[in-house]
Image (cartoon, rainbow, N blue to C red; front, side, top):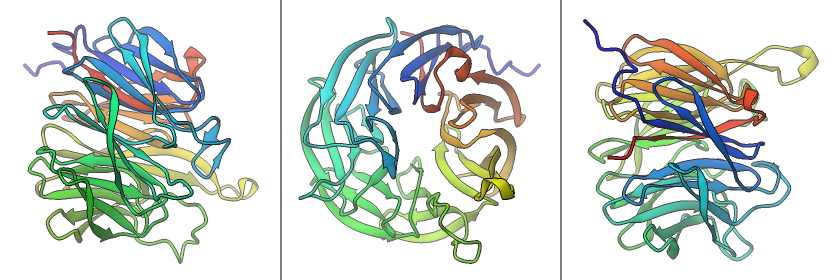
Length: 350
């Protein structure tokens, strides 16, 4: 008898950012029941759970709006106790601003936060000590708006995607220097292979200014970490924003789909798609329809369940990756907190 995908998840929690709420909502991972919400500063974006300190980090990126159309960049990170659902600290990175992507190295107790450029410095990555919650330094990425950031499991190499810049920045985390630029036509989400040899990067970036003839082929670029070069492309039918790698080696991509609509000019949002590849063979394994504008993906620690946050529909789809079936749809908008964005899976306390 096949084990239920919900079995053994009692006490686990899924945290979901409500970007325009602004809040973080907490759901029971076994029953999908809403446990409560925590109010945070305006325009929260991404989440990262630190299991050693048992704290949840949340970037707050803009005072209002979004990338390319915002009311000014924020400088703060919010630190939340996920068990009490209370804010325990607000870390101000000023003069750094526009914090967005988060990557954790629990062994070295370091949190990496991507930040946008200032008048005198390019965009970069701020390094934070997770024990003291204070910045340790900064790594320049030579691009104006590094967005997502990911590191290899060994904690030696980091990759920053850049929407407009035609490259992915490769940085040495030990020396704190930029060591390479992998050429891609603008980039969105990314993930790093379990052995650290390759990065999987969504490209091109989601710009609606491209004409059909101009847009580069959509898909996931496979970057060789040693040479900082693209060695393969996993094709997709539509533009991909989020990319996530599960513990079982499934590579998850969230495809953004637009339906023709002459009255809407660029078209209107259609249901997105979760597309699944094997990170080892790079074979397409399947897919399932999800909400409108998938923006963030995470998975359960055992790699069985995928969670897809869709910002326009303000929903989170729960997908069984073994059967490729959608098990549930969490309606974040029902909680009065529209704009589902960042996600974090929080295992119950040991």
